[in-house]
Length: 121
Image (cartoon, rainbow, N blue to C red; front, side, top):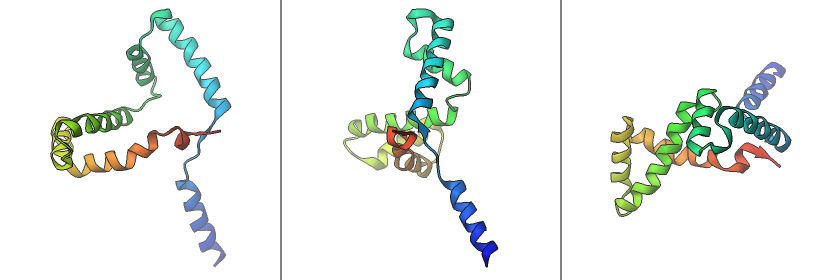
């Protein structure tokens, strides 16, 4: 009986996402600032910074794709006059994924881009 409780508790703890403490985030930003200045100088553009993060493995290609899918969804939704079905069809064609994958990304990953989901203040 006790073994079952421990196993269930351990599984629950593994699924919980830990947020980063704000001081760790600020330390990371200082380090990143030094790396960017060293590599690109004072004229670094947002594209340069994102390229640096992707090359270093700090931004996963899948997360970048998901972010772009969500951004495209918002842009195309107004173009398609609020028709979600056509918007998901457009996304699935552009990114070569199924319509249900596009829906899952938009509905499940959107909340993960909030600061409160990633940083504990």
